[in-house]
Image 1 (cartoon, rainbow, N blue to C red):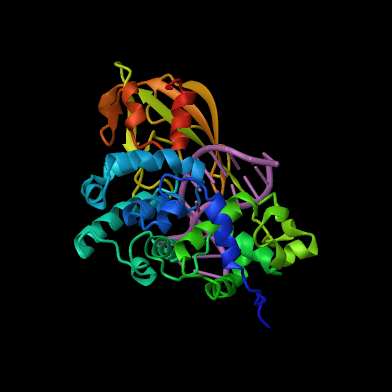
Image 2: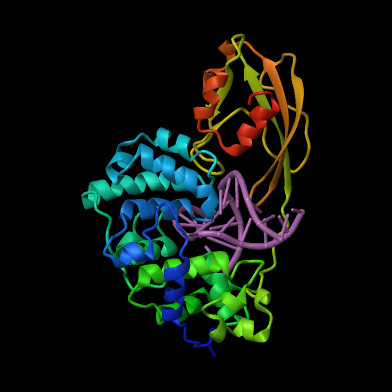
Length: 350
DNA sequence: AAAGCGGGGAG
DNA sequence: CTCCCAGCTTT
């Protein structure tokens, strides 16, 4: 017995709703323009999709405009130094995306003549493009009739089918159930379903009375749309503790260095810190001098909570040669993740 | 199959 | 505070 009942999806109703209520987004071709023959630029769609991985539309907008202004084409991005891409990505999170973005731009230019492949299967072989992103680009740019399954669709379909297990355990079944319902306007359909999930069938609010899928929705029929999707048991978030050291030279420049190329915040810029452990420990200062305690920074990562004690001191620069000294006015342009911007702010560098 | 990987906004 | 967002890669 399948976990997903073969309840048909009224794609026509979804598209009719989308024609009236589509969100206006910087990377999107409106359904009216699309109907008039305007096609999306695969470069812009790809860039937006990568930025939108596990990231809200609101957070992406300014980054998208900044990136497309600096680098209007895949050729421009492929030619840009990786350092510049990381600096512009700083604050958006999941920094492996920026490295893969750059690698993907170079692959498209060097292996495909600057033209994005037009099938989901071919797109999926590129760096940073997985099952969702390949399907989204193929549908939105080329109207490939492929199932586009993101977090919104997980929720919408889990409710529509009243899925009795966590989505994780039925992903293939959901995809198959969606696939057989994908219409000719597959790009608009994909975006319509995502808009539906973002506005009507939202995580904490289900506005079933105005939903185009209301009549076929099992969860709505049961009167408990918010009971789905079934939540998997969540792991506790451990606490790690450590110390951060903000050092300035006599001229007031701040000592920065580059993080390791693998792991958390890989390749991004930081100030020196101790190890982050489960236990509070005494600060192992980088150099013996008069350190001033500037308070604490708390930062939440996906899988742990970090509490850093912030220390500052004026030091002799000769002892530090792995990194560089950055004038306070230049900090804004450094590839500093949010954690270290918090640390610097705590030490008085705004 | 599970873990690792950021950050922010909504409620 | 918790939840979760237009997920991908590595182990």
